[in-house]
Length: 314
Image (cartoon, rainbow, N blue to C red; front, side, top):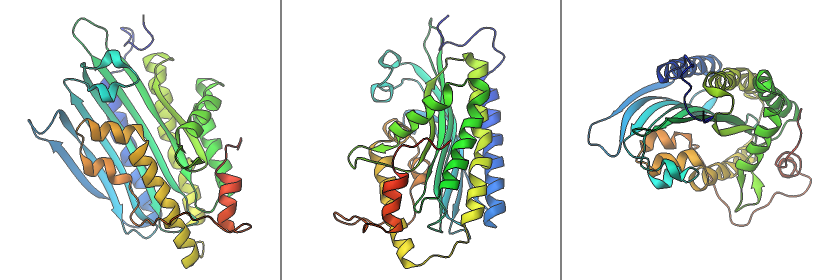
């Protein structure tokens, strides 16, 4: 049996994955609301019949102008289509034209305090079907941390959490997924990393359906422990105009990556997805400058020299 086809012995269904993802979204929102003190807006959306090539819907949970989180989103989506476009099947051209189903939870949190890092996490499931052929499925996801003023304790804590999430599923997964994250979240046009990395995986099916699903769950479940303690430690750190100005400048790299390189963003936009939900990861205040670089010896320069380089944090 092909490793990416659904096993007849598996007890896992798409409904099981959806139930887990909806619960994960609720748990993460509750943990972030406890830190912030304000509630996330709930936006339930559904695509009407005939409204583009994608059917389905989702729940976008948004917090803007919070006490701690300046803008954050935790989104769930469950969408499907009758024919996967070639642009969305670039890595698996044999799947172009198949009916498909995708679901996932994706989040980005942009804290107000420049000493509190931005974070991204995503876990997702994809399946493509065609009459007379075995369905092809995979899981994807990961999490990564983007500080503006790097802290080694924060980076080690985050990477240790990532390693612990993967440890039950094989010693080789963390080094593979860490390198994948370092390579993926790299702005080629800038020749610099987006942040300090974490883990990233896609098209993952090698453990079979049940164990691959369990691995994805472990990553999703670990997010709160990986990030919330960091947010609590940094949210009240004193800062001034200088730190805020550098934060908004570095946020520009986030925008560039998401709009130019991110596979999930491009898939959503190319396949006719819901724009508001796809772009909820955008930071609220961003600045760009022409040919700017930090002065040597400054805390801003230390971000580039000590943190935006691949390192073995744990």
